[in-house]
Amino acid sequence: MLQPRNRTARNADEALLLAREIGYPLVVRPSYVLGGRAMEVVYSDADLARYIRDAVRVSERSPVLLDRFLDNAIEVDVDVVADAEGNVLVGGIMEHIEEAGVHSGDSSCSLPPYSLSPAVQAQLRTQVMQLARALKVNGLMNTQFAVQGETIYILEVNPRASRTVPFVSKASGVALAKIAARCMAGRSLVEQGTTREVVPDYYSVKEAIFPFAKFQNVDPILGPEMRSTGEVMGVGRSFGAAFARAHEAAGIKAPPVGKAFLSVRDADKERLLPVALDLLRRGYGLVASGGTAAFLSGHGVVCERINKVLEGRPHIVDLIKNGEIVFIVNTTEGKQAIADSFSIRREALQLRITYSTTIAGARALLHSLDFRGQGEVLSLQELHQELHA
Image (cartoon, rainbow, N blue to C red; front, side, top):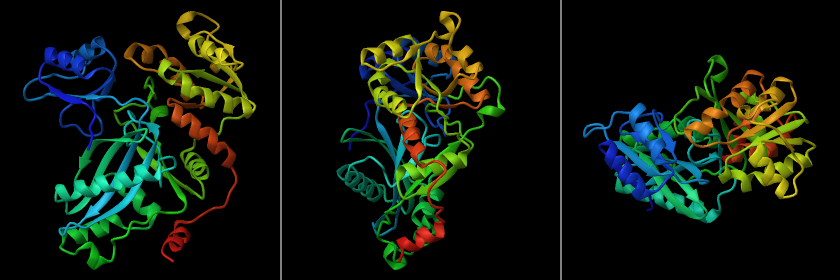
């Protein structure tokens, strides 16, 4: 099984040395944390030095973990139940909608996966079964993977219940916690008659709920540190329909036709192109910051250039305040760039303008617009009856 390159540093000098050996970007975090607390993606020696100076105290007893960040990878959660006899039940494979680097508790996810190939899904099942048996798990186990192309990297394994268990159980109609408790009490999966994975023929999407509007001066950008305080679930016969239901449940508005503002980091520009073309096809006008506008214009996409805040007025925040922007796609990297674009995201939040801080999230949102305000209402009871008929 593959892992991203990683090292453990016990002082600041060692951290910088090991970081150069692994290569940037890196996910850095203190050892033994929950909820991604104090985790950060760093892109340079300067970022890492600032992180060690300001965020953590590195020592022999409190080392810092350095992991190579897998850019543009798909993160995947897999929940399983194992018994003392080595039998393993795969509860569900959840494909995250936001790219790897966003905390699993903050990312939307789909069950079953909406883009992973059958071959990758088969490999994931094989690997989690091997892990559960090797670790002699008796009960629940959650494993997180990152998939780049057809290559699978294991990120972490937790031999315990995860926050995803209620979602998987509702989506599949399989009471994983009850089955796991019986395994721990000595009843095998065979005795319980629960050895077959249930893969729904409909989609369930989990969407996170954030408290950003209640806290002044909090940046709503997503990252490796968990920010959400709840979640909702949407179901549908297609991924787009389920995603639309989840967004409606979360109170995320469908952006009306108007001007969309696009400003993305260099690494995302190629992946922005289909999003920009989809927006134009749907009747939106495009406004972009300098670098993004130049890239889009160079590829034949008509868009208007607007200043960033630091470039002088009129700038993008002026357009937002004037009610001229209906949708925002803003991705960024590095501490300074994030700070420079903070006012864009904050103003959008205050004025309830729909925004996305990942390309994958923007792409999924646009796809779901075809299903907003329409489609059948499906109860879980009806869907579960279909699965177990």
